[in-house]
Each structure stands twice: as C-alpha cells, then as structure tokens.
Picture 1 (tube, rainbow, N blue to C red):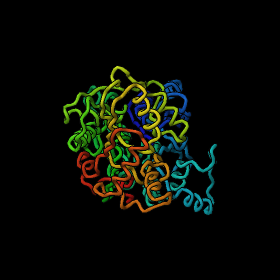
Picture 2: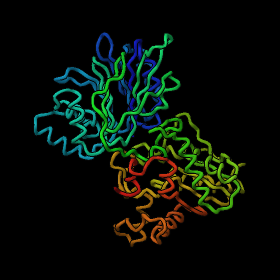
Picture 3: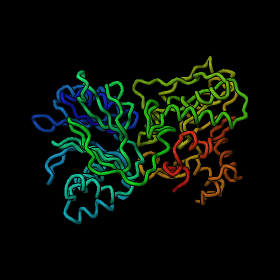
Amino acid sequence: MGGLFGVVSRESCTKTLFYGTDYHSHLGTENAGMAVLGAGGFSHAIHRISQAQFKSRFVDDYQAMEGRMGIGAIDDLCPQPLIIRSKFGTYALAATGLITNRDELTGKLLEEGASFSEMAGGGVNNVELIAALINRGEDIVDGIFQMQEVVKGSVCLLLMTEDGIYAARDRYGRFPLVIGRRTGRDGNPDGYAAATESCSFPNLGYQQARSLGPGEIVRLDANGIWNERPMGPEKQVCAFLWIYTGYPTSVYEGVSVENARERCGRAMARADQVEADLVAGVPDSGVGHAIGYAMESGLPFRRPLVKYTPGYGRSYTPPSQDIRDLVATMKLSAVRDVIEGARMVVCEDSIVRGTQLKNYTIRKLWDNGAKEIHIRPACPPLMFPCIYAASTRSASELAAHRAICDLEGGKAADPEPYLDHTSEPYRNMVEWIRKDLNVTSLAYLHIEAMIAAIGLPEEQLCLHCWRGR
C-alpha cells in the first residue's frame, strides 16, 4: 500500500518529517525517501529499507537537511520522492497506490515524446509516470485532476512546490489521506501535516483537522489549508484498512481501527459454538480481533505467540515469497507454557495465501503441544486480488482460489457459487482450507457481519477482495 507524510511549518520541519514518515513503516518494507525545500532549494534522500529500519537509514540525512517544508514516503513499488523539473517549475512528488493501466499510459506518453528513466528492476517508476501525466495539465491542480481521471487503480499523492504542499486523495477515496494541525504556545497554528495514517499525528503534537474526501485536492502552507478542488461524489474506502492494513491507533472516516477490530472479534464470538480454554491473536493485527472475541465470549485472552518486533516488519507486504517466509519464520516466538495442552481459539485478521499461517504459525502451536487449534479470520475468504494496491498480485496466490481449483478438478471455475456463506460450495471450500491448514476447525467472519463491525454504509466500502466488484 505505502504511506505518505508531509509537513509545512513556521520553523524547521525536518525532525517532524523524519518521525512522521517513520510512523508509516508498517505500510512498506522496500523503499523510503524524504525531500525538503529550504532556502537553498530542494534536498532529498532515497534508500532501500529492506535490510534496515527507516530510522537507522535516514537519521544522518534528516540531520543534514534544513527547511520548513518537506514530504516523505515509504513504498514497496518505487523509490521516491522524486524531484521533477517541469513547465510549472521544480517540485517534489511522492505517490502511493497501484496503476493497473501503467503500460498503456506509458506507451501513450512515449508516443507523445515523453521519456522515462528505467528502474533497476525494469519498467517505469510510477511516480515519474504520475509526474508526466500531471505535467500535461494547464496548472498543477488541473494536472492532478486530469491524472486521476485517466489512471485505473488508485493514486494518493503529495506534491511540494514553493507555494506549499498539494495533497490529493485518490478518486474514490479507497485509501486515506488526513490533515493535521499543530498549535503553538501562543495559541495560533504553527504547522500543518498531511498523512496516510492519522496515528502519526498525536506524538508529534498534531490534532487531526479533517480527512480529505475522494478525489479532493488541498494545498497546505504555513498560513493554513486551502481548498483547490472539491471532493467527488463517490466514496469506496478499502475495508481491509480496518481488518488488517491500518495501524490500531488510526481513525478512518471517523471509525477507530482498534474499535472496529474488537467489534469483529465480538461478532465472531457470537457466531461461534466452540469450547476452548483461551483466545489468542496472531500478532500484531490479529490481537484486536482476539480481544473482542475474549470480551464477548468470556474466555481468557492469552499470548501463546509473541512478536519479536525489532527488525521484523509485516510478512504480508514484502514483494517476494522468500522474504515473506523468512519474516514469518523469525518474527513469532512461541510460549510453550501457554500452548501445551490448551484448546485455543486463534483470531487472525485474514487468510490471504495461507502459507505463512500453515507453515510457521500453526506448526509452532502444534510443535509446542497445542491440544486443539480453532482458526477464526476476521473477514471472509479473500477471493480476488486487489486491483488498487500492490498487496495480492494474482488470484493463484489466494488460498480460496487454490481450494476452488482443486474442488473443480484442477480447472478455473466461476467463484460466484462460493461467495455465499450459506451455500454448500462455500462450506466445501472452507473445509478444504481447514484440511490444508491442518487445524481443528475454521470459521470465517461473514461479510455482512464484517461490514456491520466497521460501521460505514456498505456502498461506501470497497469490497472487491471478497466480491470481485
């Protein structure tokens, strides 16, 4: 998914930029960067963070930078922010999301005479492509709007010029972009920030002023927040933000991530009949769901698995399976005294591929003497790869897809009959996954209960991962 953080201040912004960007480390493990605009112009730094944490890679850079305005990004797809020279002058650009028609757009721009630098792994940097599309506009705001109109997928961005930082949320608001305000000792605002995650604000002294609406464009400068283009009429926010992707202390559309996860857990407990000795969550994102399950069921919440946090990020985000497997192996430590002889309900945010849950989490529980393992994912089976963020790359990766193919004799099949949780095909699919995982029982939270737990109207949520539309 990736994360963005930008800040404008009446004083030096670099320390705030450094820590604000770092608060998005849970959204990416590959690339990170910062750009600052000061009296001497733009300065910026980009590093790989696959083998080191953001703070350790950028501490020297931020201390050497100076300016009152800056943007930062953490992203798995592209090195960024980039410094762009254009007909609008020089600007810094950072953007997150997925452009599904990237090759088509690149081809059209090449035909028009544009040129692009090739990344080390081949292909075009999405941020460079977005800049080329923006540069076709009559001005920056028009360029951002026109870019959003032609991109299929999703793009949120921060664009920094001498006039301030332009913040633009993707066309349908699938991913968040929030604005924060910091008040000085004199009671007047002394800084503004834009971020993917609102959890980046409190410890830096910011209060959330508002969320951007779908497709909305604003400009931040030291004097305030300026509306450049109003929000669009349609909103479809990624439901997976509350289930897994978002940080527990963040709030999207007025809905707390932690509270939504607790409501998911409560809903799972109400639908469950299993007898068990304890409830546990797969760290970290499964913990909130497990707490809700424990609150509703009355079963004790315990920690049979503990995440070794330093140096290990999320095993869901790295681009290669080898790296995902390594992180999954190393980051969880089992507590044998809690596990041995226990019948346990284990809450998980979701089952995507299922390989890590099977090979590293469940195996550790069995190896340490678990008596029964009842897996409870807090969302329905993921049936379709995401087309708005680089999370799941293909249908063949998904556990549900593998189950359907096997049940249908190895051939591709229409998933529609498997979407109804009351149907026999659905029950057969879940049973196949249960056997593949090697667990005592498996029961997913139904989509209606998940939507109710989030608390937004269904039409305001993107449910593509589960419904394919």
